[in-house]
Image (cartoon, one colour):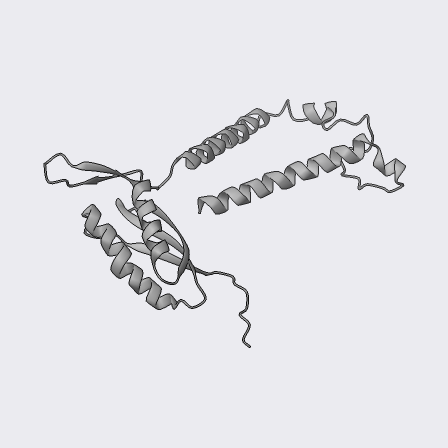
Amino acid sequence: MRTTLNRVLLALAGLVLLAVGLAVLVGGLDLQRHWNFTVPDWWPFTGPKDVLLTDRSRTRYRSDDWWWPVVFAVLGALVLGSLWWLLAQTRTRRVRQLRLDSGDGHGALLRGRSLERMLVAESDAYDGVAWAGARLIRRRGAPEARLVLGLEPHAAPREVVAGLDDSVLTAARTSTGLEDLPAEARLRAVRHRAARVT
């Protein structure tokens, strides 16, 4: 969700900046006169000496009672939205550490990346898997594994998923002492050249 929102916000910001930049470029270089074309009446820049806001535009609503509250409300909403977006970038659901029961009453800490590397190594070694990626996230307070697997041409997806659940995920549950480690696997086919038959 956050990645999609980031892409949408960046695309909108890029489109706005592109439109403003083109408007400034056309007016600043006086391209409509040099290239002999006309711009619409609403175009903000029609020549090199034009400004974005004229004196009349800047002072038109100053005497109205609603002007300053609206300006402050819009600017405040922009600042709050920007702060929310910035904080959303720093907040992650990725598991940094897992507390394991070591049997001595104190417990032990396992880094989340160590468990991710183990999942990747075990999945890579499984027959039919060309490459693997793993991420450990926290969902409803419990860790969950997200796996991305590149499958070889001869691999059967159902067998690979069942085998990974029986071997890789069971080993992860046993070694960490977790009663449950739900996992989501995304399977991708590995591109390969067609084999010649003679």
